Length: 326
Image (cartoon, rainbow, N blue to C red; front, top):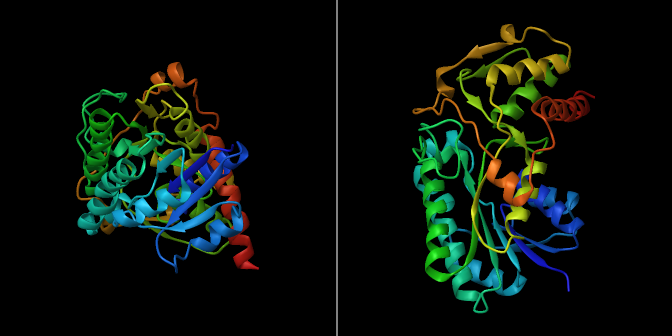
C-alpha cells in the first residue's frame, strides 16, 4: 500500500515542493489548510491537484486530531508557521501561538490519535534559533540565542519535539534548516524582493526600492534540495536532529550583485534607498551551517548552487513581470 503523508504549511514553498517530491515517490499526500477562503488554496489546487486538502488549524488541537484520524498518515511534516521574521516583531503573540505552540499541539494530537505509534514526525526548525551565534559554523550542538519572536518560537518548537521524543518514544525529528529559497518564495522575503526588483528594473516597471540592512550574511540554499533532506530524516531507523545548509555564506550585497547581473545591470546601488523602517529591532548578522552530519548519516548534499538559485529566481520573475507589462 502507498505511504500516506500529512503536510502542514502546504501553501508555502517547502510544502509545495515536498508535496511534489512525495507524490513522485508514490505517496498519498494530504495538505492541512486553514480556513475555507484561504487565498493560496487555489494555487495548490492548480499546481498540485493530486494533493487532498483538508481543513485544520495549528491553533486548534481538535482539528489536528480530526485531520490525523481522517488522513491516517505514516508521516507528518509540520512546516506550518508564521514564518516572516520581520512580521514576528509586530505580531509576537500570534507567532508564539502558531510557530511555537502549534508544534506542541500537533505532537499532542499525534500522541492522542496514534495509538499504534506508527506516525513519524518532522519538525521544521530554523537557523534563526542560533541568532547571535556562539560559534561558526553552526552545528546541531551549537547553543541557541534567538534574536526575534520567530526565533524564540522555533526554539520552543524544537525542544518540545525533543521532549515528546524522549517522553513518549515518538519518532520525531527536527531539521534545522538554514535559509532556503525558490521561485515560489513570498515577495516579502529578501531574496524574492531582490530578484523581482531586478526583473522590474530591467523591464522599466520600477525605479526605486526601499530596503533595510545590507550587512547581513546568510547561508542560502534551494528549497527543492531541502525537502529531500526532510524526507530522508524520516526514513532512518532512529529519530535525530540535523542541520541542513550549504556551508557557504553570502551577503545581501552578493544577492543583489547576482540578481542584477542576470538582467545585465552592473550597478544596482542607484536604484536602492535605505529605509530605517525595514531594520529589525535585533539583527542576526551571520549564519553558516555545517551539514556534515546530514552528509554522513543521510547521504544528503545540496545540488543547486547559490548563483544557480538566483538565476532560477530572476528568470521566473522576468517571466511573471513581463506578462504583467503586456
